[in-house]
Amino acid sequence: MNIEKRRAEIAARKAEIRKLLTDDKNADIDALEKELRELETANMQAALRHTNWRIYGHRGAAKLLGLNPTTLISRLKQ
Image (cartoon, rainbow, N blue to C red; front, side):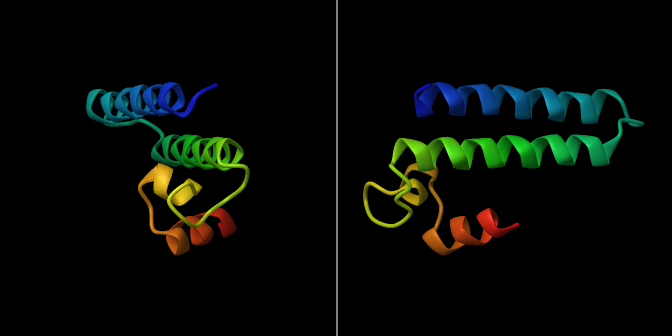
């Protein structure tokens, strides 16, 4: 799966989550936050696979995700 397609899927899912939060005031926030973290993790893993596990540099996953490399490392540790 290419990164652009994955980004579009995650953006669509984030929009669904935002809609749930605004439509249903009683939505289970913890479950939604957990799902968002899972999507973020899946996106980071997809970017790492796409870049052959390179984090730094102009062909690294951090650049692809628009993150600082140390931020990506920190999020991977969580």
